[in-house]
Length: 122
Image (cartoon, rainbow, N blue to C red; front, side, top):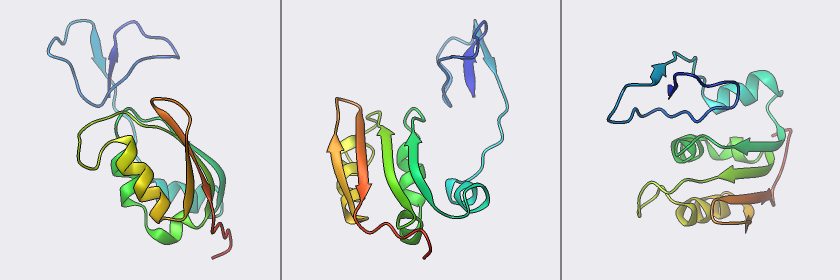
């Protein structure tokens, strides 16, 4: 992860460095798949999942198996547009609707999904 050199607890960080490395530092972070976190930390189900990962939300959400989606009651997603194909809020909203979520667009970046088929014990 790359972030400003003199950043505090609230920082603007990215997985992609800018052209200029001056004033930036690189931090090594441990990455775990969301499916693993849900299984180990929540007993497999989740009432409220908020995702704000600066463009990586697409890879994370598209890679989850459908059975994992059944165990997520509500999603709050900040989506950063990356391309016109699959990595934009409309494509992600369409995908989540196919995963049985009712999707509500809140503003230019944030949307919410309510699971129509939430089943925490599947």
